[in-house]
Length: 359
Ligand code: HMG
Image 1 (tube, protein in one colour):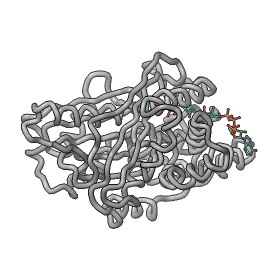
Image 2: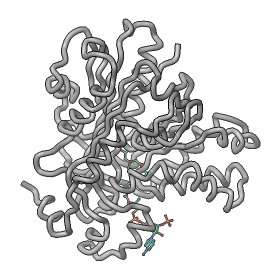
Image 3: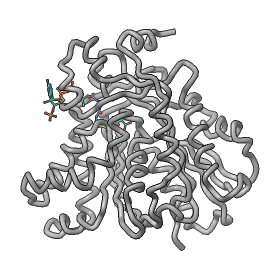
Image 4: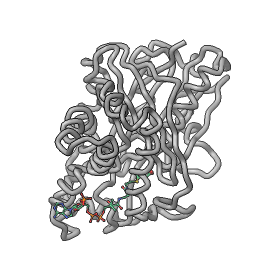
């Protein structure tokens, strides 16, 4: 039995700040943000938006493109690190908005940016367990990433949500096999009551790169790894900022013994374009990897394969594989996301400072 993605819904908030504007108020050379980190814009919630409104929009969009009914949903998981309650799961808010109740499981998962992948894996393994009663899962990954003003992480801020229906693989079949790696790290954390995360920036970079090596080197021997990776049309990564992905790919390429120009070609051919939306949005934590996957699927032909590397601080990581089942060049989620891009408002530095004023 093949399990996979049956429908996708994406959304981003109504505001965006060009990073040149942030550079102005932080007295930083804009090239550091644009080229040093590889970011372009950060997505920001307007006053009437939040993690719940984005999660609901993404879920409604995914459901509107699915051929099933609400009664056929047997599992709802919301992955987020923007939780609003220590007890009541975010999935309860979503179910309320969708008028969804009955014979189903519903909960929230948290493991930093890895949460979306944990939720998706649970859905797949639930389907494979034989206990899903032939029902489908609604998986949502939604986050608002904000740092204290002036923090080094501020240029990587972002927001957005993705919802996926996990059932028949009408969009992509996800392999039951995956490779995972976890170890206790204190690289990024947000204690209860803290509005913004604490970050050990340097440790987060080395921990991400180590997790990439730990997951990818489980696939094949050092000699065979490059050839093995070449079978994937696109390789998707969690994107805290695009240059992070390049640094990890460079390290992986060095490990495989590839020359610098080979690594650059590989990055440009299989990785760079999957981050097209992330550059326009910033880091949306649990949703970040899944935006790259949604992007890659639109450029993939039936039977072509994609890999997806998930990283969450703390830290947990997993490498997954999927096969595109149908040409998605007219994907509905792209049309909806492009509409969001076209209608969002670009704000300036002064408006950003106003928006960030503590209420
Ligand atoms: P920083 O320390 O201010 O930046 O913040 P930097 O000084 O390291 O500079 C960054 C790059 O810009 C460097 O390039 C500089 O050389 C370059 P590199 O050497 O790395 O290739 N640069 C310039 N380039 C052009 N023109 C210039 C210029 N100046 C400098 N004028 C840091 C960087 C990552 C620490 C910060 O953004 C941060 O704290 N971010 C948050 C943490 C983060 O994103 N970590 C990534 C891995 S952890 C992860 O992915 C998990 C996460 O998503 C959370 C979760 O799981 O929930 C974050």
